[in-house]
Structures are given as structure tokens and as C-alpha cells.
Length: 87
Image 1 (cartoon, helix red, strand yellow):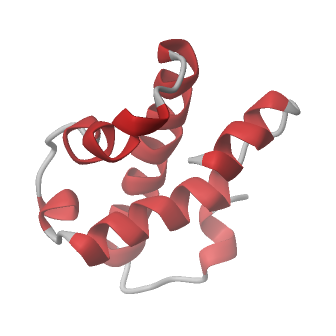
Image 2 (cartoon, rainbow, N blue to C red; image 1 turned 45 degrees about the horizontal axis):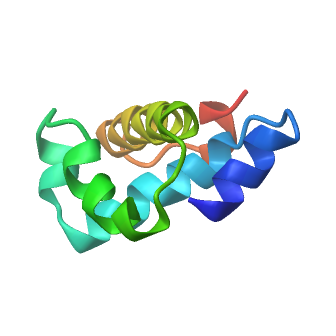
């Protein structure tokens, strides 16, 4: 979350980092890809000790949700060229 927060703070949309965060979650629990349960279910307990600002947390969660959508699309496409997902 730290890198995502820094990017957001600098006005940069960290789409690739969010994709990577979604992929890391999928490694931890494959259900994150196979269900539409909000990723906050998995992430908020991890972030609880850091006590992030709720507005900032919401932005990060939305980015990682977008990353999950891209990851799902990439898997369904048979692993197309990743750059095409971000252009």
C-alpha cells in the first residue's frame, strides 16, 4: 500500500503497481480472482495497524480493484501481451 499511496500523493496513477498488488493477493488466496467479494475483505485487516486515512484507503482499494479486473481479463485472454492491458 505504501508505494501506491506515494504515487497517488504525487498525482501518478499506479496502475501497474495495483495490478501487481492484485496478483499478490491472488497468490495468497485464489478466491480473490474467482469471486467478486470486495478486496477490502482481505486488505483492511492487513492495513489495520497502519491506520490509513479512509479517503486514501478508498483510492488505493479502487486501484487494486481495477488491477483485479485487469488480471481477470488477462487470465481469460490466455495471457495476452501485458502492455496491451495498460494502453
